[in-house]
Length: 254
Image (cartoon, rainbow, N blue to C red; front, top):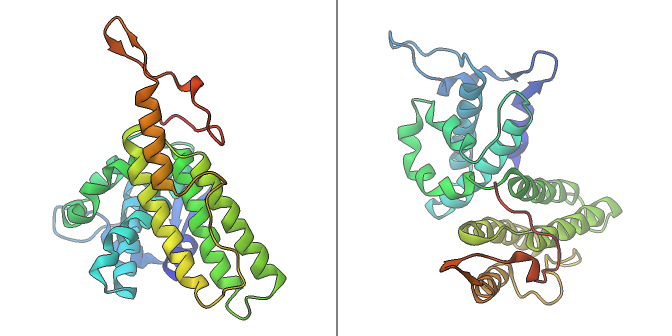
């Protein structure tokens, strides 16, 4: 959480100039090196974003040396990058935007082992990424607000907000091939909250809406029902989504 808080403080989008500004010049360390071998400054907004993303990953790794956490931390970095990218109205946010931003940086090759298998997550519609990032920030806010006492009104209110955000993430989960990777991110967020809650049992649990066992189970059942309800029209299967009753209005990914 500290890494997320720090990067958010150091990378600011200025609405006046319509540009990102670094409050810590160390973020320039991951800008593309110039032809003469001299490290340069990030000279466009995409490079500023990609450099910040790399710095966040490196910060994550310096805090947690466990290799098993790499996938999760890369997921969280992607959530932050999508949120920060969307702040700039001059960047058209479409399915491949986040991945394309990272590819512009010469450091991309060094990150390939962390990034290539995360393309499906980067391809989520922004609304899905936004909800997941809001839950991530909500968990971090809860940890910060409960640092002194988990019995304070502010702490409990923040934890209840996390519970609401978690249910919203399940109710409005994506369909088709991105459903499983979406649940993977959500599951990691829940595990981190549960780990914090182990020493704060008075805080509410993150539970799915009534009638839903888990994100993964809902995803599986939804897929089965979609395939079962597909009518065959002139030999072509088409999905009839309006016949499926869901706990909330899912959003079709772009």
